Image (cartoon, rainbow, N blue to C red):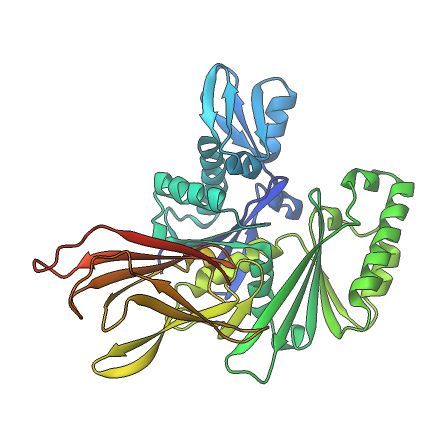
Length: 420
């Protein structure tokens, strides 16, 4: 298949890019040089003073420190605020700056693999933000990557797909991840629940209060304090759990020489892996899966960023009653938009059922359509649209479409928000 299969981890401190290798059926990290640490690319852009060239990463730092350019950092935060930056009297939007950064990241992969097109791209962030994701859709369109090739997930989802892409013995029991970055210390825990069909893969995420500035690792005393903090976290998180595999990632774990006590705890009867491209690689595994006819992940995936319930409607099709699933449990909420047209048959409401994968039982909802024009039975067609603004925030819109020339559509819309 022509084109790159790409996973990109886009963060405010460091970003990374990974390409799925179809021959090896594995993902490879891409850096600015051949060295392993070059895969962690500082998330900064810099414009050459008096020129038109732009630089990213360490090269951007170098130009800025030499006084030869003006640098802008924390692009994701700037994008979430829809901010701007003025450089040499010219105002650049956050979308302009992120486009430059993403284009140059992709250029690294295109140069390495001698490809010019992108077949599938999954971008991952610490947390999904609708403003950021909407902006990235527009950015990708400007770059020339079609919308259907682009998907976006958070770190919990990237961790899930990374681990499920490994050998089964890796995730046969509970699996955990410690992510130590300038943003703080994050703990993820994956559990694949057996005995259900389909199986459920669930990731719990916690942003730990014990996070600390990575600058303390620059001194011996600071490293000892950080090690003590992590020991306390590990003992609390792993106590009485059957966690047999642990992963370490993030800038703070670029070296683990300072964390001897922490390593002693987590390496006790566990496999431990340390690396810096886990999220980007997980995203590239999913990017490859999007191109396959049958998914390699036959699970209901539950975590931040995934809808925790199925939404269904009782409908009549070809004379038979049936249950229509309009939103599947475990769907990516940003992409879980469904539109269905119905002809109303002896009803003045749209009824649907929400069935959580876990927790309390089914809930039934009824959205009244009394605001629509009164018409004879079976002469009103409605469009029902289900969409999400978060993994538990659902919006239902019903639009009156009338019934051809006999009963023109009124253009009225009824909207209701639900917390599921």
